[in-house]
Length: 404
Image (cartoon, rainbow, N blue to C red; front, side):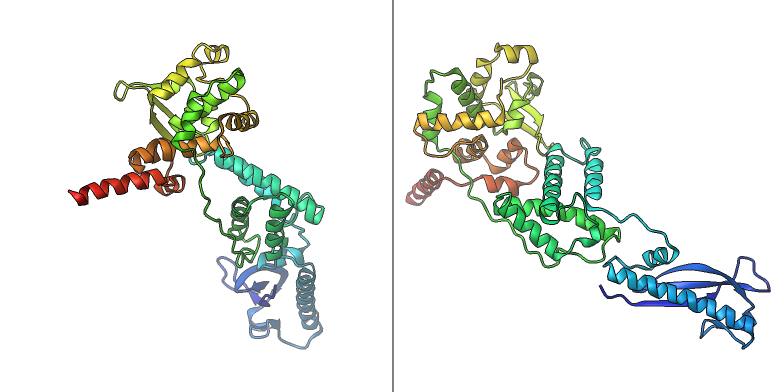
């Protein structure tokens, strides 16, 4: 990248200077920012020509002195040319270090990314969340795989990151990793935070995201309607493993808890101190945001069903929850056996709570937002697809008012 570069020699007055010679300094200026260093020479102020930055006179010692300064200037020019050829970041400080022969260890992308994650991990429980840390760790792993795929490198100097790097990374996420648009954009946004750290610290001098226009697309949330929920509730299973997963899924439908929050749900998270009814009071694993859910009778019955299960009785956990992969595999079997056409995943239970169980039954969206543990009601609105049956009910109520 083209830089505005100049070198100036000048006399610098020592502290408490009264008379005599002054040291000669060299000032390197790059794009308006300065860095200076001593030349190791001194000169009488009366013999110094400020406009030329040289000693005046024709004697041999004067020629030798000025030739020395010319040599220093030529060495700075050579260092500047070498940095341009190597496509290195040129600042007044880096040019001075190159001139002095100080080979700084270049700032490396993966090192900076790992340092960011290590620092963020220490903020867990304060201003950081485990869910966000998990996303940064996944983004770091993706970045490492991309570097190996594109450059066959384990790490790369951050000054090598340009617009083409970002475009290639985006392409790799969508093609090689088969990420959908929203997932790809979110991973790139996580990576962008690391790039902005580099930009703020002056380790890179241009923003490679200047022309990147990645945007998330609005996703149509899928949920179960009441008829599907009824099929699940009243279906009898010969297999205890399917019955167990069905019950855990239904519990999420009636509480809005995500898989990881049901898995870690402990009896200590249950309380009746608010109104004598049983509540779940905990923090969401993903965002560490508090969530408070008064339990419906269906949810209480499902909890009591597993009260004496060996895994629950010994651990204090509310449910014996299998791995996420097993749960989602079993849900596919359950959907087929119940004649549910929607492809069941555990997250659909959370959507179902937000829509079919609460909003469709006139629970205010502000209350739903608190129970889902959302930090913003805008997030709740994304989950809260208005069902046709709710629209019909609202219009029937309007007709009754108009008719009256």
